[in-house]
Length: 273
Ligand code: GLP
Picture 1 (spheres, rainbow, N blue to C red):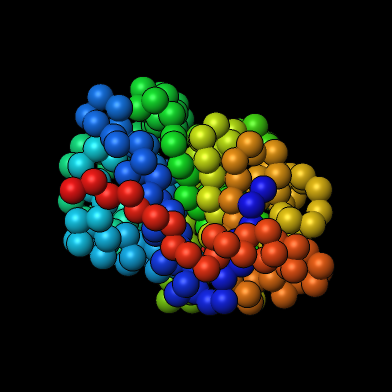
Picture 2 (cartoon, helix red, strand yellow):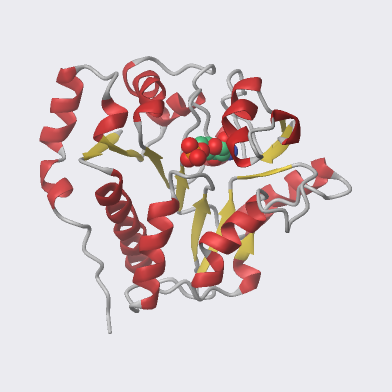
């Protein structure tokens, strides 16, 4: 696993955006061989989306041949509800970039048959050729997407009941009223995330320090589902200094030392004009 520790949220976000753009450009995607990108919601990736929008507007990366799959969606929230993940993605990313609408895939939390919706989502990922790069954030309890503690480590897309922890954490988006936070969500599984060619998890802020510690310094454990990243053949954590508060000094120094070169430079974009 690679761990890149940036001084702050802004440099972390910029680095991640350049990394995503670089990977898209390196593949030289075409309609027949698109770049398949897994995407998260939440506050963690907001800076990355802003930078990607800038890169798209500056002509440094195109999303014409990019297919996206979002990680999760609440069950029962209308798509135009300001806290639905459909709305979030539209407002914070999709409406600002040039991407064919048909290339966007987000689970439908209002589908009449939710299990079928989840199965079809998996099939769509497969049909697209599998995910090249899955971007993610992490919950304070270490969850990836909505794979709450105790989730099967090989799970696929399915319905999950949200924990009290997560509903309390997310109530900040629902007027701090926990009764307004949906109790269930559709989410890709840990197996779905692990099948991606590459997985990049963004972890920032002091409130994520415990999760980062569990994911990096403890073993693979279904109670901290982000720890599955240890088993991925190409897992990357990009974090800020604040999030490292619970790591050993030696761990921080080790990763800062081996990633020194890459931290100082933004990934090259390899744009062919
Ligand atoms: C939710 C989402 C996760 C996200 C997490 C953290 O639970 N399902 O995908 O990583 O929140 O969100 P934030 O980035 O706002 O801290």
